[in-house]
Amino acid sequence: MSCKKIKKQLLLFLDNELPEALHQEIQHHLAGCSSCSDHLKKVASIWECPADVETIEPSPWLWTELPRSYPHRKTGRIGLPVSGNR
Ligand SMILES: [Zn+2]
Image (cartoon, rainbow, N blue to C red; front, side):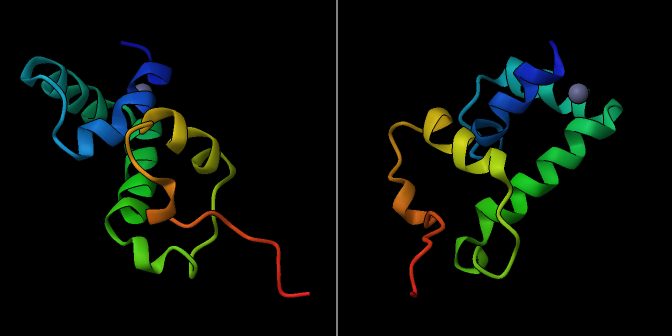
């Protein structure tokens, strides 16, 4: 599986929503791919601590990837960056 495909599945991977075989395939890939395992760490830190999302720098990819990967979840849980306060 390509890194691009792995990264698309990481959110589902974190939530254990993938079939066993696919889950293990990704796990195996992560063990040997620093690019994807770095990506997983970023996703995990944001995904598991949504309350802290404002204290970390939002990655541009997250705001584009999340709604697409998780159409059934309200992105309001994450909190999109708002350019208000004027
Ligand atoms: Zn990879």
